[in-house]
Image (cartoon, rainbow, N blue to C red):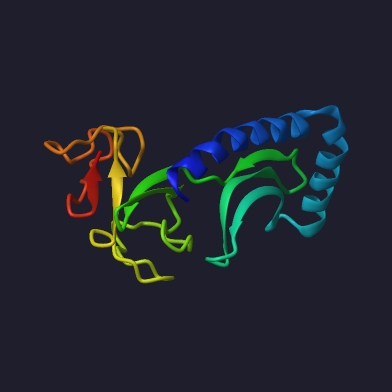
Length: 173
């Protein structure tokens, strides 16, 4: 998704997430939580149940959806349901000279699932190649692997997790 569209959507997605949070924490959701716990007890101790709320953006040209929010409730063995989050942090890319932002586990070109790009530098869906047609845009010193440590051109090894940025795969902005 191009930068302008992503930034416009991101603020609204945050507001929607807050509304879903309030709904799931409300008294009205207690019956739902009770029934979810009953269902998890009914299916047995080796299975869990989840009720998910997912917000996707669909692109008719790509014929694909891009998940922007994934949250819900899960229960195991009849226990009180707990909140779940399945979102992936956004990542900036330069794709054929244009900046794109998508969840880090998706391809910025085709929106297909493409996780662990540093280890698997070719998108399995469209064949775009990391380091050639697409580069990860690092415009801060935050480690793209753990998102906690620091990396830089002079010190590409993360101060927290030890991950080393492959300088062929990134562009610094």
